Length: 394
Ligand code: PLP
Image (tube, rainbow, N blue to C red; front, side, top):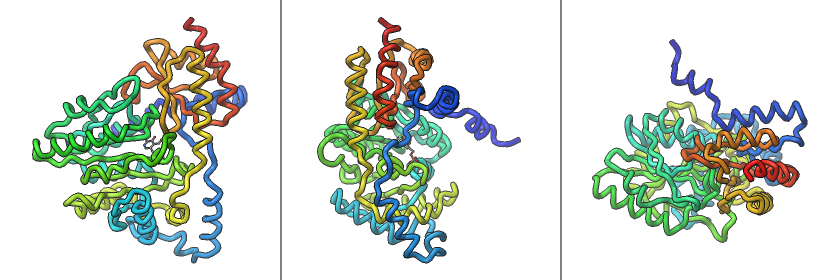
């Protein structure tokens, strides 16, 4: 018999994918311009021009066997050094290239990190709402996901609840800010307070608690300045980074894991990451793409486009009577469902060709996620459809 667990995972597409596939079918039936597909977090802004330029330069200048050949399992050392240098400049943090592992995007960064850190039965505390694949990643690594509901409607961390959830089985606390699906950015004060709690709990329980920061949306931030860099606040931090959203390269599968050299067992943690990469087959991340991003460090796709989509849609929906928590980053609006069951609401929305994702799989009920990484035309054309949908509730 084949693996029943994998069979089940393969057959049961995620809710997001199911809606997006329905969208693809519907677009063929009635024309793409008539479907308002807010299902998928697929960047709508093109990658910066420098990406194409970097590819052309690399193809012209590098020996093809080297450019398209295997790098070392953890990635090309020149690329890892360039990333470490960029981290030093941006966050004043002494990153060590020998503690950076190149991966195929955030999904691989997370699965490798979790496999490196978890033993069977270890618990992973995660603020809810959260990216639904976390459950799949944590369980595959032998862990148990422990969701802790955030405060509503701000979707900021509930520190008391987080503290209460941490026990001797807690190995990892996983954070994602700016957050998918809420767009919330956890405040610096709350992150400092959380790190103090983790230090206190480590001492009290005599255990190791790792902070795993899932950061694909770091640069998609609408506030001022730079977001806190968690390795500066807590020594036992592992960063799972990806260029999928910041450089609009989700299909190219490129990112990295950074193990903070400040933790006393950093060498072992990094070796375990290498072991996890080896056992999962995530070795030698795409060679061309490693070198492309090394040439484009510090660049970001034009986030202003998302900010404007967000402003237009938030204002329109609020005016129509929807309850919207203003997001501070990423490219999602998290909107209260006007009826208790968000699944029923999303089905009704389909009548108006609005494709929204119910919040249940994100670990909280009664909301919908609207991925506004779509064209400006889709945003403006969808507004009357949202109005007609709301009229059903008046
Ligand atoms: N983590 C979060 C919070 C995400 O939203 C996503 C993708 O949408 C991922 C991880 C996976 O990102 P990647 O495409 O880089 O694997």
